Structure formats: C-alpha cells, structure tokens
Amino acid sequence: MSLLAVYLLPLLLIWGWYHIRRKRLEDASRTVREQSVAAGLIDPASLHPVIDPVRCIGCGSCVKACPEQPEHHVLGLIDGKAHLVSPTDCIGHGACRAACPADAITLVFGTERRGVEIPLLSPDFESTVPGLFVAGELGGMGLIRNALAQGRQAVDAIHRKLRTAIPGQLDLVIVGAGPAGFSASLAAKSHKMQFVTIEQESLGGSVFQYPRAKLVMTQPAEIPLVGKVSFRQTSKEDLLAFWQDIERKTGVAGSMRYRERVESVDRDGAQGFIVRPHSRNTGQRKYCWRSAGAARHASST
Image 1 (cartoon, helix red, strand yellow):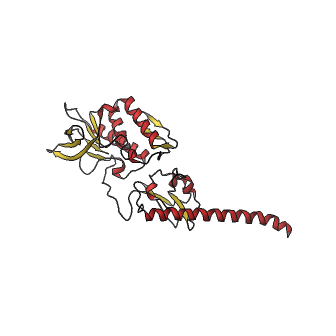
Image 2 (tube, one colour):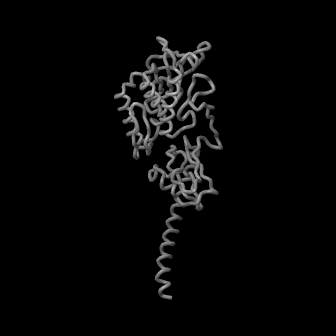
Image 3 (cartoon, rainbow, N blue to C red):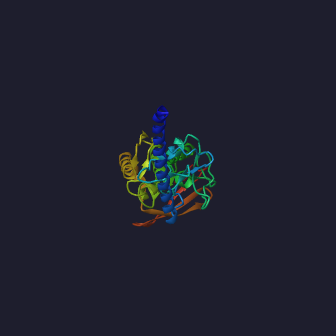
C-alpha cells in the first residue's frame, strides 16, 4: 500500500497542478472574450482562423504557436476547445493552422456576420474586367507573405502579355503601396516597365496602420529585386524600415506617388483606362494606359 502511495501521490500532484493551470488559462480566455464582445471588437480585420469544434482536441498548440502571444491573447481555450477570443488582434500569421495536429483550423477572410466581397479572379489575378488585376488584401489575401507573392505574380503575368511599348503610355498603374502593391512595384521595376504606384497614405498601406510594435512577419518571404528574406519575429516598425531601405536602394521610389487618393478608374474608349487620383499637394492628376489587347494593364492592390 505504501508503494502505491509513492507512485500515486506524484501523479495526483501533477494532475492537480495541470487542472489548476488549465482552469486559470480558461478563465483568462473567457475574460478576454467577454472584453472583446463588450467593446464590440468581434470582427477580425483580415485573414483569421476558424476552428472546427468537432475536430479540435483542445491541446492548445494553436494558442502557443500564435506569434502575438503574450502581448495579445488572440486564441484561448474555453471548455476544452480552442476559440478566437480577441478577433481584432489577429492579423493572419497562419502559425495556428500549421501547429494544429488535428487539422481543425481553416484560415478565412471575412465572417458569417458581415461576409466579404472577394472579386472573381483568374489564376493570374486578372479580374472580370480585362486589364484590371487584383492582388493582396482586396483579393482576400491578408497574410503579408502571400500578398507579397501575389503582387509579384500579377505583374509577372502582365509583363508576359506586353507587346510593343507606346511612347507616353504607362505599362502599369498600381493602386496601393501595401505588401502586394510594393511587391508589384518592385516586380515592375525588375521588368523595366513604365509604371506609377499610387498610395493615399504611406509605404506599407494597411501595415502602416497597425498598432505600434505590432508583430507582423514571422516567416521567410520572396521579394522582387531582393530575393528570399528570412523574417523572425519582425515588428511593424522593423518591416517598414526594411521596405523603406529597399525602396531607396532599388530606385523604385521615383515611381511612388504618396498622398494621392484614387477617385475613379474609367474606361478610355474600347482599349484603355484613365485613373484619376487627387493629391493633397498638387490637386487632381490623370494617368492613362491601355488594357489587354493593346498591351497595357493596370494592377489594383
């Protein structure tokens, strides 16, 4: 009997410690979720996980894998299942999905309550309007690494369709200098295309709007004119500084038009488009280019 107690007592102590710790974690997760609901912060801003409660085994791997921890409690365990407890703090790192051993997590854009309008695109990211391409967050891809890839791939597809250049005409107009738009700009520069990039705020787009010290990159990414770059726990400020350095060194800055907000994109006859942005400094501008069939394209990112 004494021998049984020797083995049983440590097991009971371990089980008791685990049970208490688990309860504290669940209580903390409930508190975070209640605070999010009370503040109306229940709609994720971008790509985010949806957890299948049937598949979820409650192991907590997704909670531990989230790069936002411990500054933000994006995921938590409640009643033995993983939950998105602070939706607005999620920016779509995707580490939770990779860490889940039960394949219970799907990354989605939009929610059941508010839905999302994602344009219908070809494999090359061309929209149903010939000559208009969509990449990045507007196309439903909020993850920075994938948005960088989409911007490059869209411009590569445009470049393959280009024919003889027309003097005074642009090959490409890129709307937005977020991850996809900046990658598209670098890709256009690498192809020696005639282009301008229009951004209503600053380099980084939506990334520029993230809270201070926000963790935004945790995985390697391929960047045109730079190559593969390994990011490890990269904050918003570090990433923007890195992009600004690339912008300066590659010379792409000469094609960037900041503080210009696009007001309209209109057809210019049967073969072209006109983009009308408004600058805070110079007023309204006009950029013209030709669409598919005349070897001129636009990329909206």
